Length: 428
Ligand code: UDP
Ligand code: MN
Image (tube, rainbow, N blue to C red; front, side, top):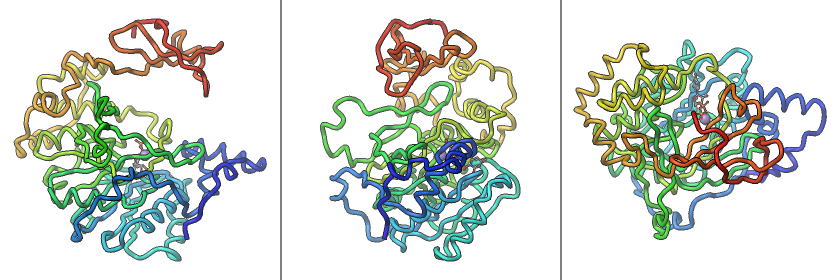
């Protein structure tokens, strides 16, 4: 029996001890660890699939999956609930194994022993515990898992997800049909504060010239055809945390760039590589998985690994467009990206297409002159009047109009009314 939990009740902080646990939890995990503990080992979540998904049929002979979950400084109750969501909502014959990889978490995060004790009582033995010998970062930790996985298909998931009904079949079906397809579930939102499971609108993955991932919403009119609520969406990039891939094809593609550290931009790099080197990338709307989105990450604050990793990706893939990357991230000009020889050899071996092809055929909205018409960028200016006033602004490209909050303090307060106004300061 999967219990229905009353989040409003559980959210209430009952006493000083709970207040302390709430505060500590946010500091350690950047989400409501107290509430996660209170919710417990399993819960009902809304079935966020479009009703047309129920008419979909899938092959009876789907390949099996190895699910790879890497975690670093993660909360035990989040992982336990995640594994139970997989066990409760995945046909057992499709689930070869779950590899739980502790990427050498710090000692004060004691999740692993707790989870192991729970597993002994509650889980089948195809849920395996592994640990890296040092903190490798999510990129190499995933490769470590992929090299051990034994099923035909590997599915990578972040360590704070809850999978929804029927999530796996549509992914495996697309891969069975074409082994060079890399497929992502639609990612629903688990609110980091109140843990509500919120169905998210369908969006495609994109990027900017700094090789930062962005969401792009389908053009107006796209959903006039209701079948588009179920049709796979071709996507230029993936968000990164959640995807399925044929294991042999993942290896053929060269796995990840193992010179990348800790976190960031590996998703954009592998997405560009997929498209340029013979694969394709899709988001599958009928496969839904919730993910806790947090405002920051509780690790790696001392180094801009996302920038460094993006720099490596730019040097390997951007060809004559490298200058656009430097315009977006000027401080990487003349920096050392590290050894790229393996990646360059891979590019050669796979006979990958030039980046120009990606721009023309896969992601034409990224214009070479950086003119993302209609797109908006969120600016938070540091060390200026803006910073002092904690004023956030969303500036519409090519205009001097900004979205701002209409309130006395000019602060971004919850429920503040959003207005369009002349930008406070234009230079950035
Ligand atoms: N992770 C890891 N090793 C690290 C850093 C992160 O295994 O050194 C894991 C982390 O626990 C999570 C996944 O990689 O399961 C992605 O990281 P995170 O969720 O923090 O990134 P976000 O979803 O915020 O992009
Ligand atoms: Mn995550």
